[in-house]
Length: 86
Length: 453
Image: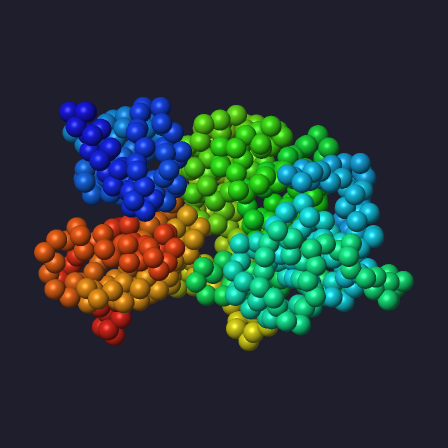
């Protein structure tokens, strides 16, 4: 269920965003949103990955050995979908 | 050898620095040094200029004349600035006009060298070996100062860049810190070009400026490199040299950089303010070849003692400036505090022996975060440690024992995070707080340290 995974990622993103930006309103995300220009810096992005590991039970950055970092929100979701343990 | 002597061998019309406030040629830097260097004879200069172009101009003028140059990062608080000026015994502070600093007693303050009076002994043209004081990167305590010389700082700098080499070095680091100064010296001493970009700009704009100037050589931390490859337009940088330092370089970022910049050599450097440049690794793999232990490539001897890396730097005094505190033995051996593992023909970095967590280049002492947590009324015991992160190297996480079992654990966690955020920097606030019943202690009653797997 890829849509479910995407909505979980959006939900955790919104939590981390609010925490990191002291109650600010999270932006609307679309496939082309540049991850590091959504208002999360490197630390915020690292926290997002750790929280997702807690929520989803996996970290694609650990599971995949591909030389790759996702750039857009769409890339990010696809990266989680592609590396989701079966 | 002084910085001026080193630049004197280059063509006068060559542009050495391009920055937000304009360009500087070899001739301009040398003329500025001739006009103003003598005013600094015997002075103990504190340099706190925000603009790297102005700062470098002053460094060129001061080296060989000033007794010492103390490089003070523009981001330093007034309190830390004051403490370092006192430690180094500075008698002249150069600070940017736009920077408002608290009044400091017993020191003359200027924003440039033009307003300074000529030194009465200006006719004497002997050069001295100026001490270059560099600040360590402490985030909590007052930073310490390590005394280098132009020679110890430029030891690994390649002096003879052929004109065909035509390197354009991008400066993303603070030029007053060890890593930034290495980039500055590498660029100007070899007669290449330094491209300084405003640190205030968003990363995408800084990279666009570097691309526009044709940046070929770039040095950054692994954390910043990850942000760079995640930024649109970054793959347009015409890089021939990619350098990483300041944190452990992992396989993912090294391979990604090799795949992104196919014309570039990818090198990671092991260096610290205290030890200087230990070595560089050019094969694009994590860790370093075990052969370096027998034949150190940069000349500084290396050895492993109790699983920790030691480096011998006999070119610097192993005491911090203005203190009795030693960071190494008298014979130059410095315990780097980095745990390493020797596997086959490779040595890998494991993290800090002290348990200090390196969050994207920011050092976090777990004890400090534990103290902050324990000040919260709902927390009885706390253990703080690093969790490996593929994005920033490590992040801070904590186990806490609440005074009583909370009705709403999520609300308690949120309250603790808000409490910490109001008291410390955000990279020190645990990204995850786990509520536990007990916390393991060692036989001596200390918390057991070490990084979570």
